Amino acid sequence: MKEPILADCEEDIEIYRFTWLRTFHNPIMIRVQKVESNFTLTVKRLSGQSGYEPGQIIMNKTFKIKETEWDEIQSKLKQINFYQLNAENDFRGFDGAEWILEDATQNNYHFTTRWSPGKTGGYAKCCLYFLKLSRIKITENEIY
Image (cartoon, rainbow, N blue to C red; front, side, top):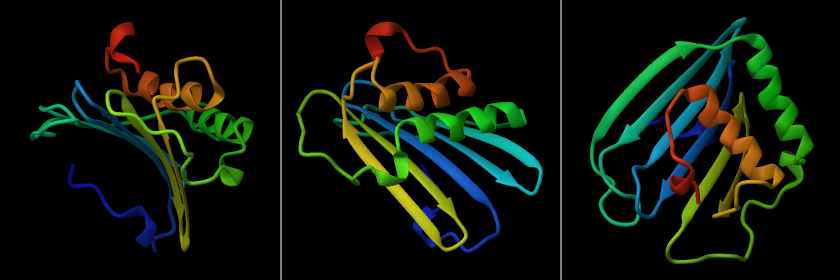
């Protein structure tokens, strides 16, 4: 997706990124970042399927978001104790989706990955909020 490696972040910015790798659907990445008092969201979508060939970038949009939306992301991360979550859990499958959530600030990085966490738990709700902000239309059966 031609994204920066967040673990190497040296700039004075704060970034949250949700990467959604669904076996049978397009890979999607949603990155929100704060630079000084500016809040932006970048969404990228690839043409393929994550479980097979990811494809090429078919969507790459960046737009401003409100500070209240940024604050809501931080609130959702706090609700799930994001910074205390283990990077991975033991559950893995074959047909499903990997949900990767990352945070990067200057010289600080944390990430988590979960396999098909459902739609109703805190982790899923946090990630799905990124999707809501991105304005991408996803049908209910595409969420797994």
